[in-house]
Image (cartoon, one colour):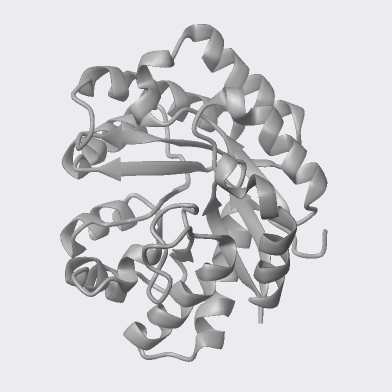
Length: 261
């Protein structure tokens, strides 16, 4: 069995002291590959160093919506150049809209659109962060699809309703569930997880955040993606091996990964 954690942040300082132990645990949990997300382009070198260290790590480059005020045209050029400079860059992001923690809605939208253009130009998938902004995101994506063209991607750490989930499935997106889906009060997210087709389902930790049950409240790490897979297997009434096979295949297809590398 092989699992892929499609969203990690192991470059954060909280992991610095015990990365080898963390690697040993993800290997023991049968996690075969990691996709490292990017909060801002200044992280590129540190993430690249991790990819040099761990051969089963691919990564993204982009700017998180909560850092939208940092965006400049030169940053856009940096994202483009970084994405072209290393074959291990498999996505642009994470990008998106976060109306829960910030009120600069128009600025976030402009930065999102700029990064969508880069992804479209490079024909790379996008990693989308969306919080309390599903309707606006849907509108932005539909207009972009109409005016520029479709971009592949994933709704990461998804927490939307089944109706919102269907919006993004209809736009061609994959849906990725984190440890949040295991929380007792996450019934809405669990209902969404039931309707995602098997060929669009992904799993992630978003570590170091949002550790799943039974690790909730502790520092999250890639090995815990197995708990997400186990919960989804029970929720969807399929064997764990089926969830592993489906989500691993989907991750390889979306991010053009090869587990033999």
